[in-house]
Length: 104
Image 1 (cartoon, helix red, strand yellow):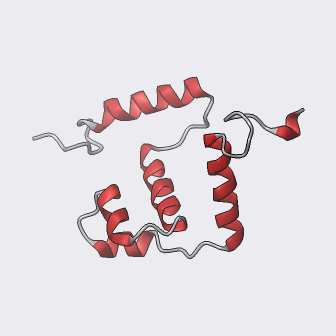
Image 2: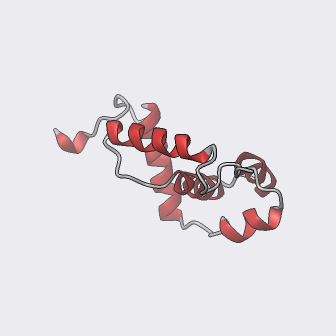
């Protein structure tokens, strides 16, 4: 019996290969697919998303998992950085998304 996305070569292997290929094409440093899950959880916590909502997004079976792993309290500096990142990605800062005034 194969594993469901486990390390035994189940459904997870094609996902990991595709993710690695797409990351390389995008010029992004290699990371594990699971690391993106942690990033998502930490961003949700920093954005004050309710833990039950984060639990559903991350597909955790128990709220305790969500609370134990993703409950770092972000600083105001972190919140400001996230706001600026969001603004730059959406173009809300007046620039085209992906541009940087400091490069000019």
